[in-house]
Amino acid sequence: MNNVTTIEDLLECAANLRSMPVIKLESSDMTIMHSIGRQVFKGTALTDRQLALMQEKLTPYKDQFINLEIDFDFAIGQLRQPLRQIDRSKYIKIIDGMIHVRFPFRKTDIISIQTCSSQLDSSEYFHQKGTHVHQFAYTELATLKLLDEFKDRSFDIDSELVEVYNEIKNIESSPEKHITGIFDGQAKNITTKLENTIKDEIGNDSVKLIDRRFRYGLNYNLDFTPKNITEDIISRKEIYFHSRPSDTKLGDVLDSLHDLDRYPILVILDKDNAENQLHSLITYYRDMVDASNQSVLFRLEDKNAGFNQLVKDRKLNNWVDKTTKIVYITNKKIPKPLLTSTWEPEAVLICDNTRNYSKVDKYVSNIDLQLQVNGQDSFWNQLHFGSETL
Image 1 (cartoon, rainbow, N blue to C red):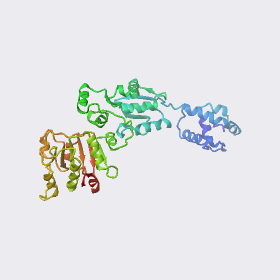
Image 2 (image 1 turned 120 degrees about the vertical axis):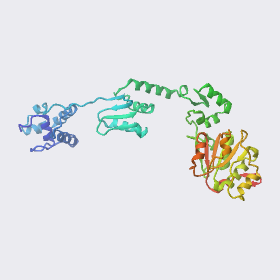
Image 3 (image 1 turned 90 degrees about the horizontal axis):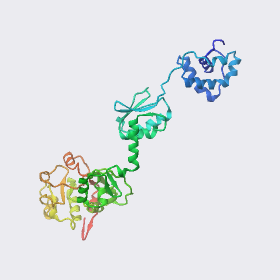
Image 4 (image 1 turned 30 degrees about the horizontal axis):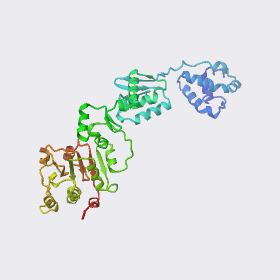
């Protein structure tokens, strides 16, 4: 057994890769020792950490090697080839406008990278298979997520990233001092011009302020659980709000628009159900909005259609001007009188299911409340006003 003179030779014996009696290993040692034994058998040098670990793992089997007339004490300290050098650098740096995260393979760090990348857009993360570098778009969110995960793991972190991270955390701890938004029912960190606009339009009404936050460009973290349709509307996460007949009564939806003072309102009717929808709406608004302040800007092709007669009987064929509170159109086109007027809606009530009407959609794209109501015919027949049942 004189040809066993290095630690690599010992490992090949332990991994049963030599023609010699088997070294009996503990089950807890077999996987790692067989793996590294096959590695050195194929010519790959040991790293410093592998050397230290294998010296530790082989020592309990010293007597078995001695019984095979192997000079264990000599071989355990000898190398067949120089140690393989491993770059164990760990850093998070800005390189070419990207955040580079570099570390040697470690399962916990890999899991953290996966956690960070899952919270970002897929286009903001890149990793070339086989490398130790993970690249992220240089954004505040990426900086926050990465340093939350790695700042206490002995990484060399770019000072600029640390500065940005600390500023983000400072803002997080006291957003009311830094962020343009709604805090305690008031708009804070805004310009004097915006402050005056808000005061002129809604006064000090905190409910209306939350409702109109998209228009004013204000951040707001919902700090209450909605308990009714009005609170559902004002706590919406975008400018669109979809009300389903199974969840909400039409009257409650219209009450909310009225309470939020969302006039003028542009109503987009479903052409196939226009008469029923118009009848329901003008009946609801009968004692709230005078007919002279409502305008229907389309007619149906059938000259005898009940819709056209309804418009005539209710005196809804009015010019659109600054006093007009409600304008009714269909999803087909924007009527010319509307395009040429200075009238602008404060809200859009969409009674059509499709939302595939590009011209109308483009016209209302900047309106900060677009409330869609649609569904069964019964939804439009549920209102009761005095002796008239819809």
